[in-house]
Length: 469
Image 1: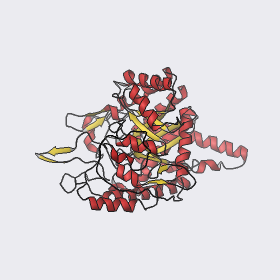
Image 2: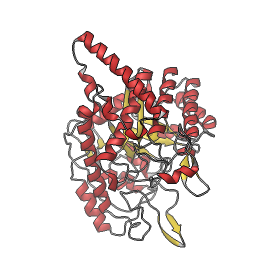
Image 3: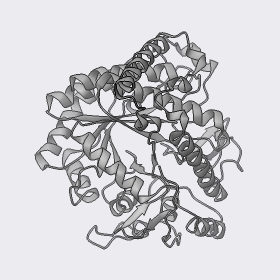
Image 4: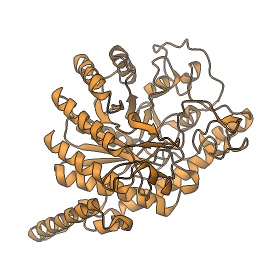
């Protein structure tokens, strides 16, 4: 990734949500979403302060560049044809207070290890997309939360309010938008330095070790794979009498849910020598399953930006609705522009995924198919702790590959919530974590994540499925 800035900020004049009368035939601009109903948006009590923060954000340097974005789009077009595989992973919701060297390095190590397994076992290139440097806002099922008779606004992510249960902490604070931007910039700067330097060198994968799982089954499998790769590299470089320099650095693209529309608009820019507008807060923003209304503000905003974009689709997505949304979001049917991220749950994927694949094939629309096996398999324990079972996650992933093969389609990507921290948030896996183990190291403020060992289990399984595909 490059650090060269691109400017020309879009004007940002925040206002309240309007009516739902705008037609998609009206010319798009970065503010046209304001004429439609915007779901999952925070309510700010100090409009003047919000205006000031958004105005300052609109003048600050972008976080990513248009050529990085276009490069990702080309990669996604290749993924749709089965030429490479995309792994997208990271935190459910980033924490402003955990923007630290250790946290960033641990999460990057997991993505690097997973991609190495996928490349070596499947013999295909892998594109890495991190849920990082901007994943600070989360959609919620309710607007409020009640504890012991006290009702407060729900926690919506660190860029909006805080997780502590007090009136002040739950108030939407515009200053958090600026903090989110600053933490994103710090995270990106560090990741760029790591990926361009020796940390990412395939000749030294020992840099990616996470010591606390060094005796686990998955760690042993990974170490055996690293040894094999090391021997293969040494042989090739001996024959060539030269180092394979292309293996000394990697690309890592960023992604987040484009939920907070005023924030996204403040970093939406026109750039020199390119047509259109780019969201320069991230390479790959996506639309959540709760905000994908055809006549809603999120679809309106996303249809006008040049980034490759993701669309979460669940069991309630109708086939005709999917076709219409794809037409709106990708009217030129550009390859690599639109990724459909399906999230059904293991019990529903067999009923719903085939009809959506058939609808897309019959319409001739170009899409990149991605499996999100996490969000449809969330449940609460008897003690009210949100968790997911690794077996269900694996089964939905396997079903996704099998259904795409049966329908003559390509499952090109996997979208996982994971962490390099030694957490106990999902049950099952190689260590067979029980519900009673969750309290031992449950750190997520919103949704449960796979820990390192569970994530590595997924990567070995995905690699086997790519080989079959």
